[in-house]
Image (cartoon, rainbow, N blue to C red; front, side, top):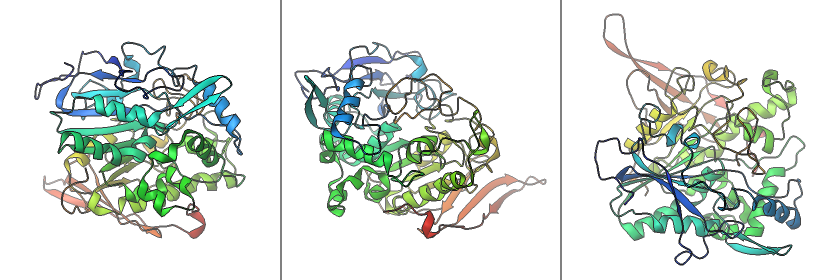
Length: 482
């Protein structure tokens, strides 16, 4: 029995996170790329609360801007020989280096989830847990069975006494959360009754944007893997109907975020360096940091536009007030935020405001949208912008680049790698001291932020200070193309 029935005790600390391989007899299709059985790791915690984490690690696809089926299958075959495509070499106990930040069992490092039951789902299908096909290539079968893996994991979990379930993920795993949280919630509710279900996507709101040459290079690569893997089959049927002439749009959250019904929280930097490198194709660094050349004016315009493009990209999702989604978006450069930045006091929105962990905790207990979008642009959130030259900024433990090659800390990489009851309202939440509530009434044309700070004056009287940053106009040329 890997559940923990204690209440209020610290169940998670000191327990191992152990591997469970899915039963071939019960789940014959839940296989990694190479055909080995997929699985998950479990750390004992409070039975009533469960955090499921979907690992990231990129996608397999042809690395060219005009991908071919052969090129994509070649890349996927290479991936099938590694941990991101096979369970052959998975460790029996998940290393502690992977269990930091949001996944830590230390209450100081992780005040939100430290004693929850943790389920860590390794990523081995290359399609953000979306594919459903077997393809023969050069004498070997490649099993694109990500959706079957996802279904098998949730069918095998012991959710009978679970009252709260958070489905989270990083990068490619975060995209999987956005793609599948509604169908997961529907299946879990059908099987186990009324469980409070949330989505938490860390760096998964990847935008469909052209690169500096005007080519939609990365979006085309994503379309290639979804075409080959039959990935569209598992996407939102509502989105597919709405985009019947361009179903591949339903891979990208800017086109379907407003359709997500399950309460979902976005943790995403306005300046995601994964999108800087792999989507925009930038080979520079703002101000010349990290030992790279400084971006020129054209490149800086593309970099600066990421802020307004993200705000406009997720505005329809967040403006769907009845669903009470949330966001925490700093104006600093990072890819994935729930590891090193989870409780880091240098990473707050806005500067001097709320860290990610306390914002998520506030959102979980709220019945309304919690929306913290940094009113500053880079580099004006000074504490975290001052870290942008640090090599560890984007290094999540054990993460990989877009091809799935494991990299050490300090290397720039891509690890790409039930709705609330009643009508919820977006509002400014007045909370004490360092927690700052943020109200954004963003439309596609403007965003106005109100920041309310509770503090005590020199006489000891509690007062509220309201900061009203200037409106940020989103011009037509800055909006992502549709």
